[in-house]
Length: 358
Image 1 (tube, one colour):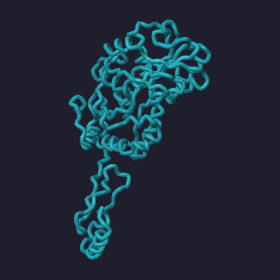
Image 2 (image 1 turned 90 degrees about the horizontal axis):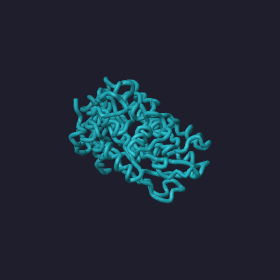
Image 3 (image 1 turned 30 degrees about the vertical axis):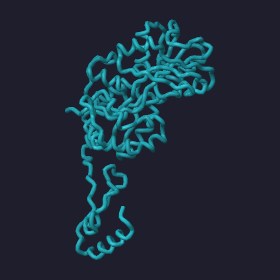
């Protein structure tokens, strides 16, 4: 920033030269205050130079509307989508709508098939779909691109305290709700039960419906994946004594031997008010993806806007407190060229496996 005396000198000289600089003087310094590419700290080297203009992003290929495949209305991704969609509408001046779905596998298929331009999925599901190893779809999906990891999807198991259930192994023969069919909860808990050799009766109710049925003793246990403490667990615990438990080392070892993209995760004591000890469970990572043909400039501006407005987003949902640009290296599929451009600009070296491809 120039000192006061320099600003006075600049104004004096500019006034003296005003008639010689009629062409373009009125427009030279005009910039939109909301433009993600503006550089408000740029000043002329001498009073007679015009300020450099910020490059104007070509919006000719931008859509007027974008859909964000999020999840169920009461799911964590659904709630985060309801925060991010209007924020993107404001940042980009494009109408962005959060669309409901049955979960993160469905979201990926919606983006890959072009039903939605954006979506939330898991780094695990993205890897499986890209490499054709998914058990939840019979096709290889490569019409989507990664933008950024978002927040951990932590598996949480809970039951009435009087049920006597304190471990996954004790679910044998019980009725267990795995949230919506095809959701991350449903997919990963089925894998846990599979490797553990545990047979139980499975329901696929919404978390709210499952809580009601647990209160009526029609369901013995429920599972939910998302940030901890999960709102579904807290909702049930508000009127019921509740126990939350994790996954044993034996089951975890078997799980990662077959599905290596599940991480060990510790839910620290006190995360839930009644929780006395740490709980060892699993977690995967939610990520934001886009259709591969979405305009590069649009994805660049969107990526930049999210990171430059993180403080605002964190104030609306704590999921955004987990978002860090450096974590992009944890993506499991190639980045969109627009997102890669932003990360490269801020000095992040991208691993070969996530560099953009045609």
